[in-house]
Amino acid sequence: MKNIRVRFAPSPTGYLHVGGLRTALYNYLFAKRNNGKFILRIEDTDQSRYVEGAVENLINALKWSGLEFDEGPEKDGGFGPYFQSQRLDIYKKYAADLVKNKNAYYCFCSPERLTALRDEQKSQNLQAKYDKHCLSLSETEIKEKLDARIPYVIRLNIPSFEKVVFNDIIRNRVEFDTATIDDQVLIKSDGFPTYHLANVIDDHLMDISHVIRGEEWLSSTPKHVLLYNFFGWEIPQFAHLPLLLNPDKTKLSKRQGDVAVEDYRAKGYSPEALLNFVALLGWNAGDDKEFYYMDELIEKFSLERVNNSGAVFDIQKLNWLNTEHFRKLPKENLLSQLKSILADSEFNDANYSDEYLLLIIESMIERVTSVKEILEKSPYFFTDPLSYEEESKAKNWKPETPELLNELAKRFALLGKITDKHDFEKPLKELAAEKEIGAGKLIHPLRLAVSGMSTGPGVYDLLYIIGKEKTISRIGKAVKAI
Ligand code: GLU
Image (tube, rainbow, N blue to C red; front, side, top):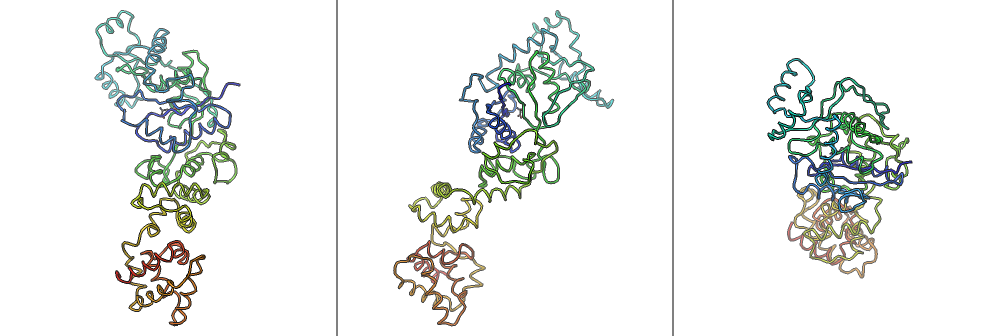
């Protein structure tokens, strides 16, 4: 059997689309499952769409998600270069071969003629198609025009009435009538190849066994099949992945939510969760399992189990998976994330012990869905409260509260070394009993005084983590400030 070699071939547009991430993931899973190679090829021949930094963004997003390629930019596997912009001579040579064999031809038509043709076809309700006008130019005419430096493109000479049939692993037999296919431009007037030519040549030269890509390329595939045939090359296996849809079943768009992997990263989603989520956009293992780690995905994945109907992008499911993955992360991982987030935060001047940070993580893990959220929801572990929640003040801060809290602080001060969170409970309960009030009358304002907030971990956990000294000093501050 042929070596399995698959590729992810993005055009650098500036960011990695989640659809692109799914394509990359399916290619990656397929390669890993079959001991194959996963190749990254940058399809950057469209000069008009050049975006500064786009390739770096793309490679960074792939790195972040953990989809490491076996061959690609700066990772030569003997099939490079992996940037199409560095392979222009190759495309020119093959285009010349096609012209020589009359499978492609020079077209010197002016933009004006092409527009007029299109308008004419439109007015007759015909499909817009080039009319092969330049196909009948003689050798001499072609030479004259080339010598006169008239701008030209090279077009694929699509045979008129044929069926192009190919197999797709997900869709089975696919058939196109060549009458519906335009004489595709292969080399543009700037000398650059179009996607179709470069893609086919590279898939062949890079020995790609399976072309796994989005459904939007399905209608291009007959052109590619014709090219393979013209060149006399073996046709790779195709698998076209279903479209990604918004919940209202329209094509996934920026207008209805984030589409860039970078956006999800910035929002604190973990790569494990995002990959788990996109894995399920069009694939399932045949059961209703939804939570996956990468090694299980590799073990279970098959192209045969990819659906051919559109996959709805359900953000709720992503959120759920993100939480599930987050809560199952090893402590060390959470700790190192928290440290790095702290280092980039306004609280980066203090040195927190691992023990302290682990206590915080433990107390917050069920209340957040990312480490970043720990800082957002409980800044009080890193700073004295800068303000006090108004609603809680109105509800819980009574005229007698300052005196009660002062008394409580006094009793806390008498405690020896705190070894257990319940050490704080005893004096609080005793004071409540003496004053004949419910413990809530102490607990709510105490929480407010110590954290500035009305929600968070259990109050005794909170006090235990913050410590006796800080608890007492914060009570003092709050009594003055509120
Ligand atoms: N450059 C194309 C893209 O941006 C690649 C399509 C393919 O995989 O053939 O998606």
